[in-house]
Length: 193
Ligand code: IMP
Ligand code: MG
Image (cartoon, rainbow, N blue to C red):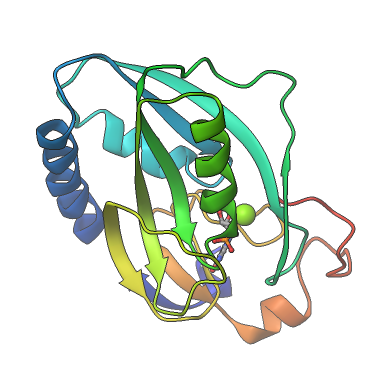
């Protein structure tokens, strides 16, 4: 797997140190009532597991399957809610977690839905935020790291479903993107969460 990586952007030790600080910010900011954490699958899985074990608060965990990337490295702009049921958030304090803030469309759509479902307050945390102009107006209260506007993998982030288990964030070699190991063409047909 390491052979497919052009360069490491953020190594494991640096991520862990940052998660310690983010967890303290979260514990400080939320009122003393049980919060509901919503993890956007699959990208936020690794980040959320490591972050939440550092948050010294009573909380409940919910997961949401939202498809916003349809294969490859480009966003299509369309956000689909794939679960039959939406978590019960009416009147609740919500922490929404995603892997990366890119165009912002995903977090914007989920934020709107949480508001429609009656959440009392929603704060958002992302491991990464791309340094670019968002397609929609959305911000995250907790940002692990700001990265350049390039495609990254690792620590939950994938390319064609792979590389999520890399313990660091890195950039793939161009050759891997041009000719993925899946043997499948990089088309818009596979829904890539
Ligand atoms: P959005 O464009 O902000 O809606 O981001 C949608 C989703 O695209 C994120 O939750 C990620 O799953 C995925 N994504 C965006 N940028 C990257 C990247 O650089 N690498 C891997 N996945 C990405
Ligand atoms: Mg993804």
